[in-house]
Length: 123
Image (tube, rainbow, N blue to C red; front, side, top):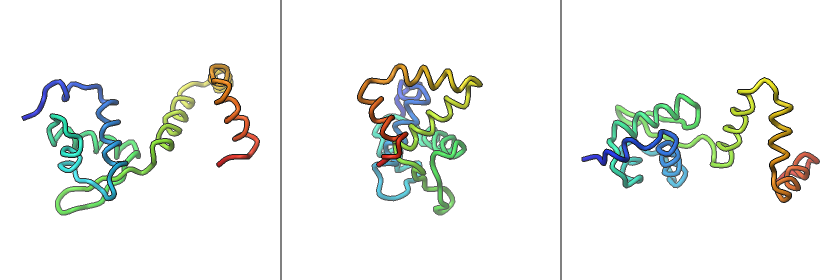
């Protein structure tokens, strides 16, 4: 039986929970295994839908396993965050203003990290 409130959680929260399960795994997971790893009242079909959407977005990969698929994360958490940041930047035609406002809102520590990265001292 599923918990109705879990089924109504925002898609972003569900996707984040699914990604966390995939990152924690040492091998690709089937939708049923992801469902068990989440430990919440989600229907397997809901988990399958979330995984399919993440695959369509290019965030997870999949390999054939029997009649279905097993899924795995394509990027780690920092890579996914960077991808989202690029996506947000691409949505606006005035990139310079967006970047200027982003930089203006950085903490001094983050500003120092960014300066170091831009100078080529990347990790």
